[in-house]
Image (cartoon, rainbow, N blue to C red):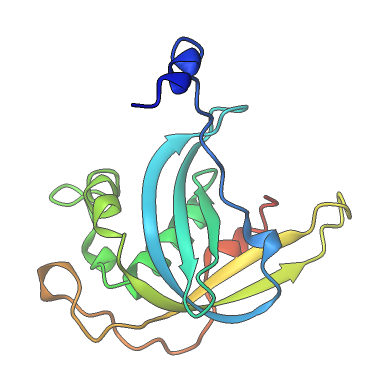
Length: 169
């Protein structure tokens, strides 16, 4: 039907598009929906990360947020955010339910979750040209319980999120 397209068949190599990072979003409070979630390794350093594609509700814009597994504090922050998103992370303890197994099972359940968050930019003293872009997951927007009927407790204080580790993107 469209024979002129055949000339591109042999060399067709689509490049995956990366979503803009948190730096493209002005500081402020937003509602988000998780549209994609994948555990993968970074291209350059091969660090393990959890990469989230997020839709900014109301604007329709898409951004990316990544959780790095560089230290226990970063993993605990992820656990706190997952708890806010409705996962029973307080029960993820070995031997029955170790974090490593529960996280792998939770990742495919993240798309569709909606939450209220706050984007905050902080200066980077080591490299002022690369400020830290932090996303704090403050509350779940759905009243539906999470997996297994678990609903997270109401937070005592707001603002414990992925950006607390101050990792530049």
